[in-house]
Length: 254
Image 1 (tube, rainbow, N blue to C red):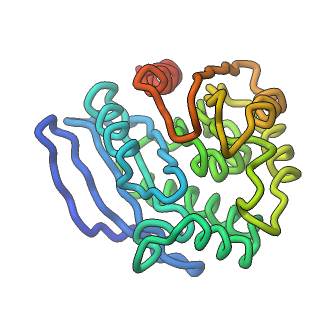
Image 2 (spheres, helix red, strand yellow):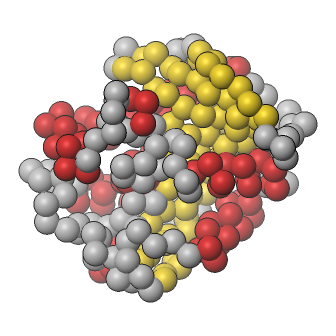
């Protein structure tokens, strides 16, 4: 198992501890952040937070979610940079740049490595903290769902719930040119049995709503819910984020 290397630690005014870390895997480094609740009792569950395209583990959506889960629900939160994002690269890449690199390497190859990065990180966190990694939630939309769906499929009963969405079987022409992810998406969606909350943007210009609804239909979760909001891909209303939090806490928080 890969050992975790702690790099920095800060404590916010609400008592949430943020710990920066890095895993040095054979396939490359995995930069991440772990947030811990104030005075955590042993056995706290963990929420994995997957960022969107052109974002990072410190995205404006990720950090507030992490701190809320820790301070308000007593959960831990964990985020790692996606492929060719954040501290995995020396400077930010445009969507066209990172998508071209992923396609050149092989979308399935990169996806499988990202799944392994998450799972290796969880193993390292389990060894280094008092987290209960048998109780895991996942929150990730857009690119966070692109890599979250296969992760959810791979985790089986370890995953207690997932918030996914803003992602579908069809996508705007020009995205990930030369790759056809639909077969993989179908296969992964059909393996997911954990409770899922699926978020659809009705006017999504990147992922047409019919393709998003098709993914929801493919999920085998006995407990799956759909929420839909008018607006483009990049819009996330505060009430939507509140639904993500409520759903996750219902399945993870004591």
